Image (cartoon, rainbow, N blue to C red; front, side, top):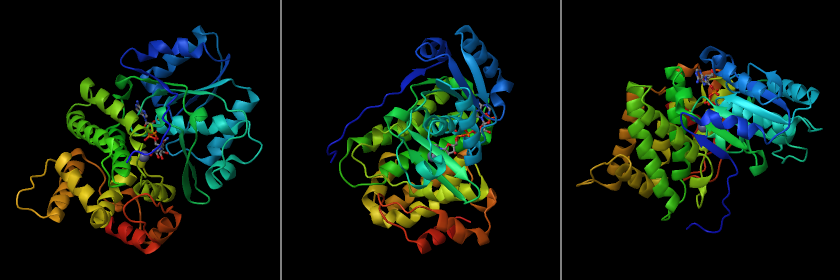
Length: 388
Ligand code: NZQ
Ligand code: ZN
């Protein structure tokens, strides 16, 4: 049952090869002092940095910068960004990069004018912003997180071995995002593939919750079919525009709250993956792929009907003469084969996890209640062991 909901998403999306042409008109809507935020240098190598700086100059903006936003941005980096934003009294933050840069820009936007410690306020107490929020816009260069059209912001604290996401409200969503699939062609293969699995996990963690006849599930099956089809093409030819553009749009729709409507949503794979990330700093999508098969095989009996539906509608499993368990199991095997085919990390060892870390990773894992089975500590340890 869909129940009652309000749906609104304030992010304006400019999509396609010419999407960057829309940037000047967007920038015009905000004040002159712009904070340009980017990662470790990929945008300088690709020439995108020069294009952006020229556009900002043509628009008469006074630009300050925070460079070197790392994958899995840290709380120390957040404090640095807050200082730069405050010292320059910025009116607008332009994020140019992947999910880490977009997440970071949102974190700075709610923290620069905040009198409290933002880590404590937003990522430990999950309080909502009470200070002035600096508007953010994104030019996306990596596909996967959905950060370009949502309020999510994930920050890592290496001292306390915690990687925590706060999902902020509409006022923190990017005001606009520029999505040009061609800007993602230069991604290293490993990052491209990690992004593919991040998308898959976002969809599955909403799909595998609830058991009713829900429009969101039908939309998600469509998104999954598109992702699986296009990922196979993109892995062979990363410059196939049709495949890369389809995947880019699937990623956005997977986590812009649309398909969560009427769903309780799970997110346990993300909680385990984030704890793995806090211990290893591994690439986000790969932390999810490494634990997914063990997780889904473990919870399958608790959501058997849905796993059967998944096998039939997404993996085209032939049902003739098979029990529900056999059908569901074949669906998961087909998923596992696809994961291996596109070249995802399938175990935790490859990410640098050791047996000694497993108890600590389980301790850092938040337990969620929206999926088919609420896990306890021992079950999380067992899933981690099975993922080694
Ligand atoms: O830093 P640079 O030099 O730019 O290099 C980046 C980085 O090393 C590189 N890259 C990005 N675009 C490129 C490129 N290299 C060449 N060409 C390009 N076009 O790719 C590397 C990874 O980038 P990153 O932004 O870290 O990846 P991703 O987009 O996967 O973001 C991961 C972060 O997002 C969080 C994750 O936890 C992680 O911290 N998430 C945010 C979510 C949200 N806001 O809703 C949800 C997700 O589940 C996720 O948790
Ligand atoms: Zn994710």
